[in-house]
Image (cartoon, rainbow, N blue to C red; front, side, top):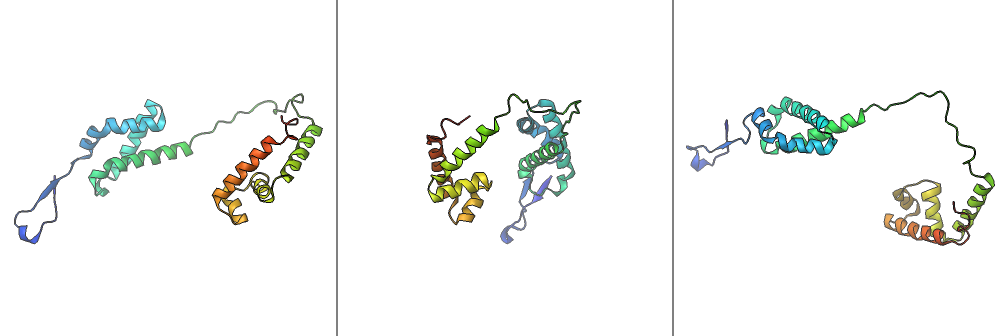
Amino acid sequence: MTTPVCTSASNAAAPVTQTLPYPSFSSYMRARQPVLLRTARSLTGNPSDAEDLLQTALAKTYVAWERIEDHRALDGYVRRALLNTRTSQWRKRKVDEFACGELPEPDPASAADPAEQQALRDAMWRAIMRLPTRQRAMVVLRYYEDLSEVQTAEVLGVSVGTVKSAVSRALGKLRDDAELGPVRP
């Protein structure tokens, strides 16, 4: 099958034609199946699942075959179909839940002493209070208020890089703090 390519006005009598790389879906599938199967295997990790994934993606490509204008981009189209199909499968996966006769309770022997936990919290707060004001604010926002680096930067009106470096230095100071050494778990 050939498709005419735009010709210039001076050469209108002899139209130039271009052959499609894959005139039919079956010829494309036969030529590219091994390569696409390797891609599917890299997405699934299981040869059987890879074959099923490729079959599903090729079925979607077959349905859209007439709508695909640039047949040179078929591999990209099929790879995108593979990825989208695999993502859909992953999202729909069944999560197994198991009922049990007894509720799991924490082992009372492994529970930490509340007095030790309070001593650790107190020591941590004293160490945080010894940090410079800016580092203290960043540590509190990042780890006690659970803000992201971007949110912390917005709140303090600084760049994300400043937050990262200041928090890194603050954590280094907390690691080296002598008062936290004896109460670390």
